Length: 178
Image (cartoon, rainbow, N blue to C red; front, side, top):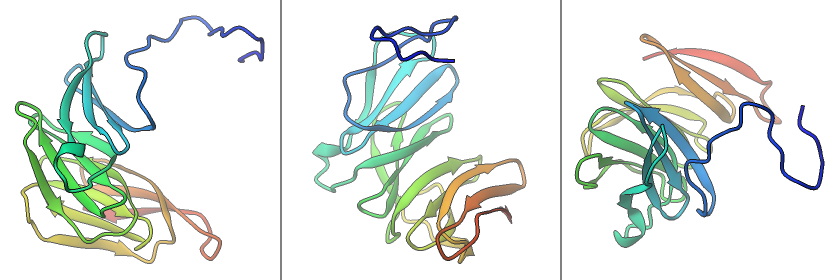
């Protein structure tokens, strides 16, 4: 239990601060000993999970596209992100930082997941769960609609699991085939 003392104290073991000083860090994922995170309206960074120097994967503010990364996912070669304000899903090469926009035209993008074949994301304002191939310009396929506002999404080898609800739709957990 945390106390409300004037000084900051952490229960044992103490957490390790990996990065600070960024505005509104919203998305984080880890793979292969590296932690990737997004600073809304700024870019995507990486830091070794054991600690070390923070490095920029890609600065999206210089692209002129207005992409503001919100949530991130990663595979062996790319970091994927949703841009809430532009309704786009993009990816940055882990090696070069090169940007590709994968899918556009969505409303209120939040979480993003990735597996060997595809990228999955939810558009909260559209109330849809969407699947897209990983390549730029791939066709996006709506896997499920009218869920109420999706709030969280996870996956296993065969399915996506979504929590959703709104003032009009009772909260629920839904399984969706990939």
